Image (cartoon, rainbow, N blue to C red; front, side):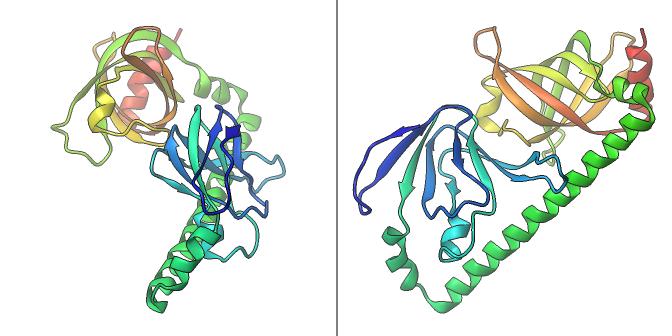
Amino acid sequence: MSGTNGNAEQVIHLSYRKGDLITKEGDYGISIYKIIEGKAVISQKSEDKEDKEIPLATLGPGAIIGEVIFLNRGKGTRSASARALEDSVLEVWHPSTLSKEYDQMPPMIKYIADQISSRLIRMNRLIVQLKTQEQKRLKAIEKSDPLTSQRRYYRKDVDLDCHYRPVGVSSKVSLDGRIRDIGFGGLGMEIMVKNTISYSHMQGDSFVVNTVLPNNKSLELKVKIETVTKSKSHGRLLLSMSMTEISDGAKKSLGFFLMP
């Protein structure tokens, strides 16, 4: 991390390398951050004893980090951690630069802001609870049936044309891609960078994917982006996507295809 110094009234820009911790859950930090360049993932610790981090959101340029601690007037600790997903530049605001403006807000606006902050904290806790329960469920399956676990994570190398669209968008929308590997746990897909101009392709974004397997069986899946990396091919990206929904028929077709 590097930055330019100044007093509390000046704008300060800090640079973070990919993987750097910006804020840490449980700390007493008071600064507020605005992402100028790059991306950051917001996470909270899992509720189990393994101390894993549960991703809550991926933020890009223009997004704010640390607003909850400000709205709580510095009381308590940070409710989540923030980590740079790529080399990033953030603008840092000291609370003293905002407190005067905040204090001049009408009481009703302050009340609304406080309610939104409390609701966000509750929603994040619920997400962590649900994801922790899902992790425990998967561990139980792995323990009771190791073969099921192996099938879940097995990926078969393929080279399949596919069409996809964001979940909730009209079926008339059709983006082109190529599936490079596929399994019950998810798939790897290569896309053109231009696909990201009109629709978000960030960690956590969900899509409907349609393709035809080599055995001529049509397949429709709902998937969620886990990671986005640059492809070796110019102007392309590689998306690692986890499976979120598959029909019984599609599961059967995929199962036959994945058989040795």
